[in-house]
Length: 325
Image (cartoon, rainbow, N blue to C red):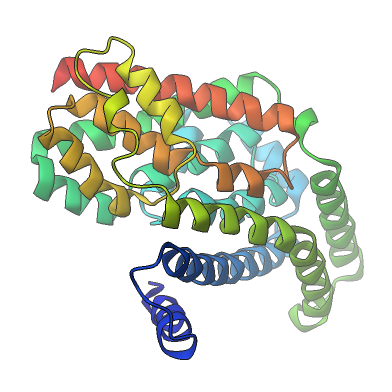
């Protein structure tokens, strides 16, 4: 989907700047240009689209519908399935997460999407089938969807909305104020666009610094952390290999398709498949760059709770994988 951005990044780094592909700095810079451009484009599209949607479907109505209808957890499952069909890494999922929050979707449901989106997608599924077979792929996909669903339900029941940042609360207040104006004045779509555009620019200005810092951290990790750096901590004789693999994966940053070849190497070296998959889930589902991006919308306490719940779910999944596979 974003191959053209990669080509532009390659052209700038390798042709215009004439940097060597062998240097760690070159790889980090290439990653930074690609990911920053991609995420800013996603942010613009999602926020603009949600602005249009919100102008016709008020936040209060969405909240009231979801709270009034007893879906028995189906909304979390649907959000997880939506995460499967959106091929984004953890940082790229953040723009949609912000759009969902702004649209009045319950926090736990948005968490279900945020968790599943980087873990499971069609590209990762295709690679998984080729590397590990159908049975392992099915178990992985089902586990990823259930992980997002269950973690979302847990996080929703913790009533964490009070830990959203004042910036998010201001965005929601502005969205509600704009909707009131749309409703009372019966504005046409053309008349709504300037109001929506102004809010999009305001939101982008607020979050761009976090995007730049977060992706810069991710670029440095992507370029400078060797792929085999953590292997010695995940050997099959270590009883705590799964939790260690999950926790040590957090500083790394990649998407599922990028880390799967590393998982294959780990398995070939004798590391249990469940431990290797837990490591992969930690890399793609939790990362410091993602935490940096989320810092704009969540307080540190909420980020800590989110990371803790997801980490525990991944650790449980890793042990389960080792039993089943």
